[in-house]
Image (cartoon, rainbow, N blue to C red; front, side):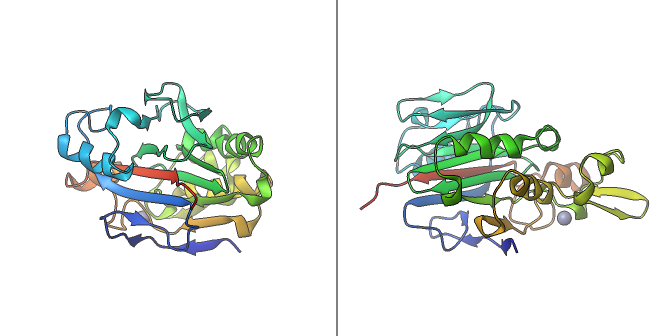
Length: 242
Ligand SMILES: [Zn+2]
């Protein structure tokens, strides 16, 4: 069985998953967002993001291009906005990987000496990004040592989708009120398993972006006009080992 969890609040005001090893820092938050370039016009938000990275300047953080499905291994010296990449892997300590999200799940991974983070839209899932994420990570670490954390993301309760998806992701749809509802985080878990990841290596954050109240949801904003939270950010960092 895949372990299902909910996130808990950290002392510094973010959501995290409990029980992580000491070498991993993981943070999730609903955040303010100034433009496509994460927080570029928002000094307060910049400071908060910087504080995730131990007080580093924003320029030292990587802000991936979530609209492209590439996966790249990055080094501590890499800086700024990447293009063409929505999956990141690093072996370097003190190099927080940060990614934005709307309704799509963020997928975190960690193993001794490695952290990784990917943003997976429905299109990414349909094109096999979970499998490619596993394949790329398996080039960098022993796959049996890697743990994956899926979500939060929009769940089937709030995600009617094109009916044809029931042929493409048959195990991840529900039918209700004449609609086909898609469980994107569940579909990611299924693809991770097909790529060789065991249940025991997967943690599923069982929180729907739309209704959990913890995060931004584009669909909630469209439906209800909620503008308090304007985007989600996820961070994973490999810490120095003591
Ligand atoms: Zn929901």
